[in-house]
Length: 317
Image: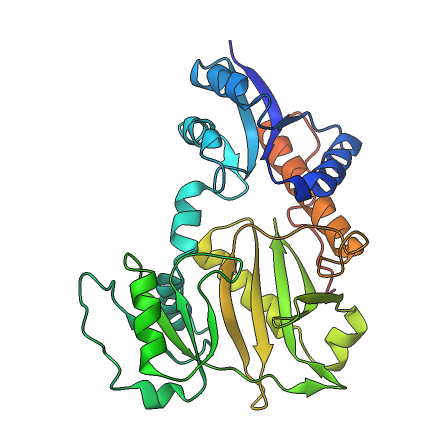
């Protein structure tokens, strides 16, 4: 008979250590049985999973997207009844910016005006007749990829578009209008909003210098920023992801525009350790919310245990 563990966490990025340690501590506080999978024990645990000796109620994969050694484990778990924090099939759809652009439009979420160019090898012709509608400067980015890889800010010429298409031959290319946020008491109204298993929290975010600041409930109320919570919950409904972030800018015309659609692997480095990292209390809130999400899921699978509230609190409340 297989051993069932409440929560499995696979990670391999050295800068995740503080985040994983804090998350495991929050789980321990809730008496959640947690298994940490690293490169050192990945092979052994994969063998046990594939042999049906080990299962997880909830699984959090922070490794297989960057380290292929973890792929057999993730693939083996998808054939079980495990609830993924972010299921690989949902992630595959959500990280396609071209697909998400269309989904957002169809669901009433404001997005930048965008031209989506097909994969170069399928159609090498330049569909730039509507380029004037995007405006200059504009942004060029591949449909896939994160961390700013391949993103060209301040593009002005067709030659730059051509270069991007040839650099990413197997990917669609997005040409987007440059969104200019309004200024709120000296700050650019550009935000990173997190969805964490039903809970929502928000940060000021500067995409140029990559600096976060906590957005307080008072600021949210003062500038009527609650709409961002509705948007991020709608993105959850579209993407089916249980933990992600999105970037939203508030324009002079008072539109909340989603400018970077879905980030499924959120940077959780502590600001106390790195200036361009996430405020410590936001990371703490994320860990609390993930632990609550796991606790609710485990309790639902075991009716004899008391069931916690159906949704974690929002920091915007």
